[in-house]
Length: 399
Image (cartoon, rainbow, N blue to C red; front, side):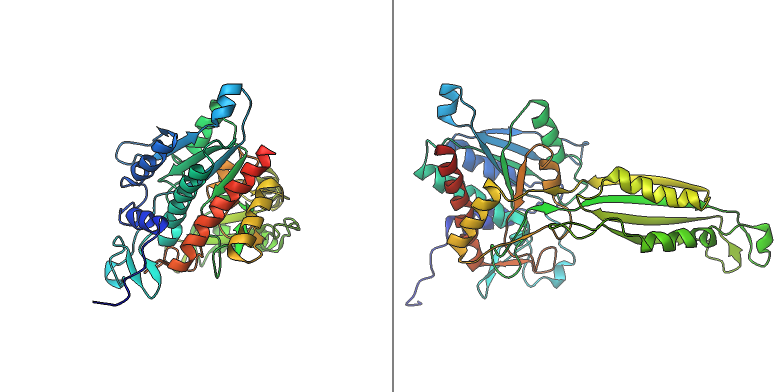
């Protein structure tokens, strides 16, 4: 027997392991929300399921809120802070390539392995335990605390957070601050937070020509040739200059489809898939208008279908950003970096009904990879940072 028994596992680590053990591949929640609701209900949270979606692919959504008891008695308005995130994970990929089963939480070399360890079941566990500890110490807080959780973030994201936000807006629910548990850090917990994200706008452009024999170009019209000047102009276009928080808007072609596969046939059409990642200096409407103007100027015979994946959002330094910065400074001993880089998150939906949204989570180097993991040493600081944010916001609204 070892003379040194293993250190006891923290409440955050135990809950993270319990969630990782559930194979919640999007959109299957696999009971994760039930586990979380069972922890929140005894704390006074009203837990409401707002599931939505077609039969066989129903998305699980949880809205859980603990209102300010004193505000309820006095009729005063309270401030609401929301913890948001997702229980769903991406598919595992080839199981044979995992060093241990992806839904069996496993410890090796000071790391916790399992699908969702970093993205983002550890964040969910840290949020729940932080709230438990905070309310045990401060049961009469003037803060209203809520959780907005979904099983649809890694999927189409049409029946998850966006659906809950629509329901909350329809009932006039007021949200003041929101922390999303996305894995935002780089080297260690807290070294980077997201105070905004770029928007995403995709398009599928079809340019029509006339199919014909390649030896008789005078009898056909090549849509690839006709599109080429406009394509070159769009690639060279400076859509905006960005700002202090965002890089300039970018436009990228992802796919070009044209031709029959034969080398002697001029195609009758060419299809181009493209995407804008745009900042707050541009709008979807302005980008659409400018791009279509180029196509019309070149007199192309075209059809264009647009898909708006999300508008950009930006939280300027204010009460929430300041509280998170101070919490990271005190708990982690570092100065956090504000960033708007990376892809989209459900923060884009929440920002439509909440004026201050930030993202704070663990390091993201292993997310979506084989052998996804998190350093155990990053877990408790994340929980402590969430709790410290609650304490700082409590002090602010109590003053």
